Image (cartoon, rainbow, N blue to C red):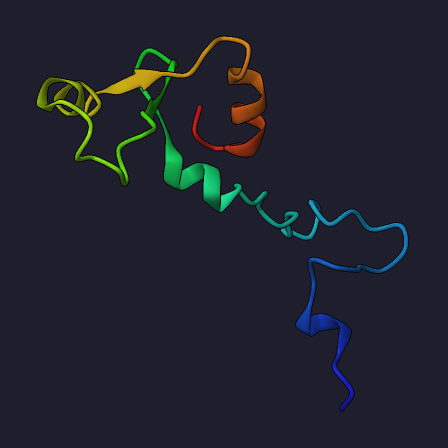
Length: 91
């Protein structure tokens, strides 16, 4: 099954012609889907995350402790650069 080069214009063009001149741009960068499901960027630019320890073994935890675990918290500043790399279009 032969596929013409025009079917995939973003992959290759004629020599000496830039893709941008032809109106073709490179493919979009992909975000890490696991990170996209776990983190959100706030309006201020900080990143929020959900807390841990709320999935199972809840009988031994007090009601107050479980209630406080509902809250979201911010990502530590030492990890923000790594998360921003995983989410290229979020900030």
